[in-house]
Image (cartoon, rainbow, N blue to C red; front, side, top):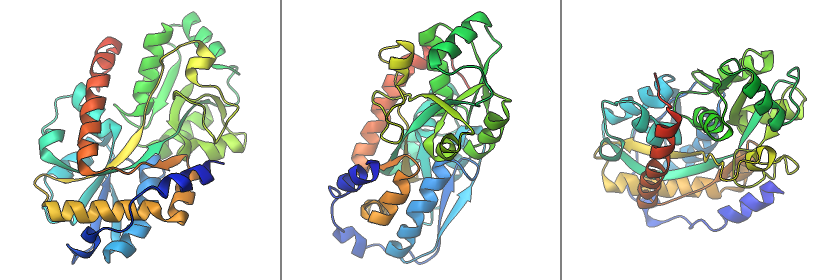
Length: 321
């Protein structure tokens, strides 16, 4: 069901534009990922990168730079040559949340160049099957009974997993401990073993474990149920928390002052890659929905999300420290 819907959505993307015939890279292109291999950002970049390699005529080398919630990759991109050979798959964490929570040595809006969004990401709130909670309401009741004892893991400070837990604390009136990891792959090991009590994690990292019975999904942290698990309630439904919503998306960024011909060429190739039925189908298997944009639309999204999350982060007291 979701695959058909996603393929229909990608059909709305524009056909190859003249930009595809303009700037031509002459060297391999590195795409930096601010998290360890195995997480949603890494899977997205490698899935799209295989098609980008054909469209741009140069090898796409995915370079993982985990640490600081994606900030290490962002800073490396800021300081890279503005020649199109070093790009970054940014996240809502690195582009929106982190600047609201820590003092960065760069400005996302002026020191990085927006190229285009890639995907929207499905998340699930999960626990290990050995945990006693079968519903989100039961988990919240346990957290209220033991303030400051239950823990939740995330793939990094400032990401959707971190803010999802912080927002749950704030709206449900509970107090839990945040345990950040350096990527989704590392996080999964500790969720499976029960070292952390719950997590809001990407479908790319947890869906295979849910389907195999190694994890139990309690809710979807989005305004609508997911076609991947249509019987699973949203957090708002499961815990009577109207308005609870944690968006998650990834986007291609470049270094500061990246020339517009390069931006247009990579944007056109990125959108063309997401039109490919095989790419869209592979993304859908991981709960990743193509969500292309122009550079201007991505810039507007970053600004709008920043203003949305600013008061929420302030109320929740979320920080990288």
